[in-house]
Image (cartoon, rainbow, N blue to C red):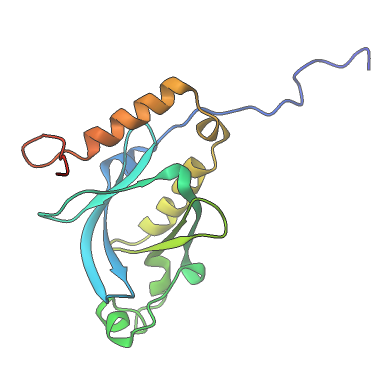
Amino acid sequence: MAGARPGVHALQLEPLRVPETLIRGSKFIKWDEEPTTQTLVTLRVDPLGFFLYWNAPHMEVDILDISSIRDTRTGRYARVPKDPKLREMLGLGGSEPRPEENLLTVVHGPDLVNISFLNFMAVQEDVAKVWTEELFKLAMNILAQNASRNTFLQKTYTRLKLQVNQESRIPVKK
């Protein structure tokens, strides 16, 4: 052991790098089982990699903390709507060769027992796979999970900036 070099076997921690495609955003159809709804949304990640957020035209921004993401799924592992009408509206079960490849399911929650699902369908080909892989990398980044106090302050500030309304003001509930 005298000739061993220190730090050779140490884990290399990579800082967060958010891909440009996630920052610019992509078009998805957000669908829910109950009530049976589908909405065209633009899905984005903030440049610092703290939040996944989406908004539909003329609607408020919905925000999900990336640190609460437990899994991301696409293809045959993604959730498929059970309602035949919704499945037909999304174009699943038709003559397309592999429509499941456009599905994206985000599993999130405070722990592995209490989880919720967000379901999206990509409008363009091969977008869901890129989003699945990159979101999972962001969610499982060790440096992001063990951040400093300053990072958490910046995270709170970023959340406030994302929640502004049309007049560029932070909404206050009365």
